[in-house]
Length: 136
Image (cartoon, rainbow, N blue to C red; front, side, top):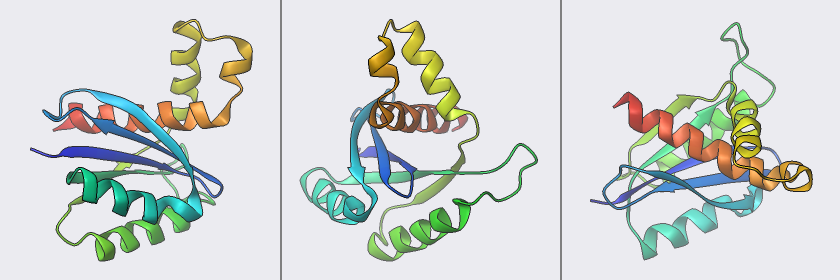
């Protein structure tokens, strides 16, 4: 059984999270620049074949598209083209950044660490992945 990798896409940074091999636990993995995402995913998939990809889909509170939605839709198309054998799932990512901040606060991270946007992106990706795992 391969791992499932989640993507919290942003125009500058992309937060990544991955499951354990038994696909039970989501853990933050890395933050990469958005232009380096495909190369990173290809290298990761060669090292450790992926069972699925999960992409956080940005929506407003009224379930409408945001400024970032079109970029994420384009990413999903690109992922399906580049990884035809790997299923790509879309997950609602509303409130994940807020939940990431709350998780960091509850975990005792200091103010400086909580301001690190790369950390927030990784934790947001883990929240997206965990919600996908729980919905199966």
